[in-house]
Length: 361
Image (cartoon, one colour):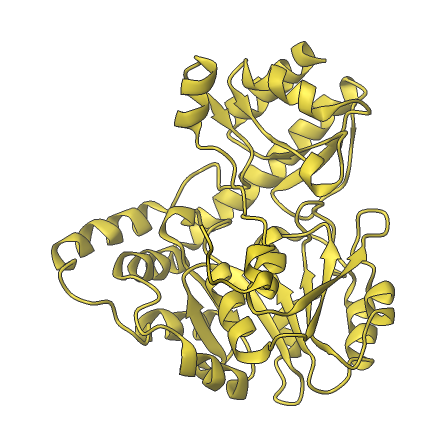
């Protein structure tokens, strides 16, 4: 079929998400699988968030609050910013797409660490812009290399902190130096999807750069630490002038009623967030100790996941894990054919992964 789509759309490779547990169980003839592949919250959502969703079910015939009034103000109070500095999105992907529509034109260049979140590349290409890749240095974003790749065509830069898929962070000092050299008119997108898990005191916080004279947008999500991945809700923290531009093209009902209600309740449940962080940090320590005993090399992380270097074909090991009902993420598609990415699960799931890996090896 001769499709009238532009070449830059036809050239895009579709995003391939991890398979759901149900599909893998059917494919491999297994049951009771453990999924440690998508960096999800092992505890699930806050009970307060689940209750808030239930209360909203009777009003599903009504349109959502297009302004997200209550959630925006709760976020502003918690983060110490003005409501005008916050834009809600149907997950961070939605915000990335809106930023691209506002700031990118065909032929513009966008700097992207490689590897990183695949939706950066897809969104940039969908705008007709050109991704310019910067390789990681020892699994960390190389800000010096990114700066060297700036050109008169550069309009946007993506920095993921903590980085996905490596879990590494850049330092505040390094980011400060990078931003000081940034030309006017270049939008820096600081993707902080995993910021709640960070323990390194030298890692930056996007709120510190909220300045009308700096084109920096910090992206955050309720999918990870708050356990609301299935409801698709995130937000951006940005200068008011940028937010006003985003609102010009934002779909009026881009965040749904259930997501807004759940996010408000999740923000109020500080105890559940604390339990999540403890479960993740304790789980990381347990998994890493188990890997040390197995003499399997892993990398440090500031997220709820980490990389393992098997020093052999990780895809083959992954197949053996799948046949034992353990789902992790092989990293061949990211350029690391010997690596697996594993997120922290419940204690029983973490134990099952270690036992399955020992068998697979």
